[in-house]
Image (cartoon, rainbow, N blue to C red; front, side, top):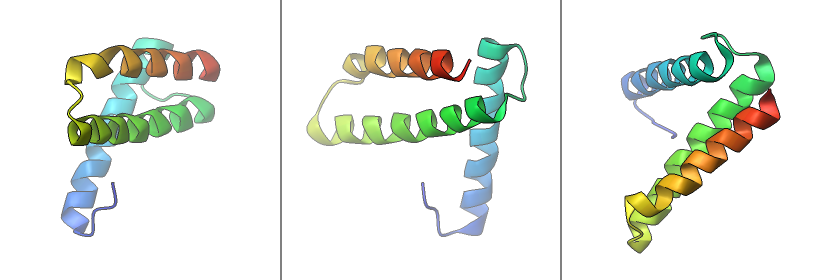
Length: 81
């Protein structure tokens, strides 16, 4: 997401940070993941948004995307561990 409005960008950044903290806590037992895991999580969130945008554009049902998104997150966390 490349928000040009600074307020929107700040809100988006806070949201991303809270999602990273929640996923890291679930997968690593800490809200402050190691740098490689943090990078993997930020990359996953970008993938997540892009994949859902593509699915929406081509009419793919969201429930069809769930296994892809779940497996991608799991793979990213395994690789970062």
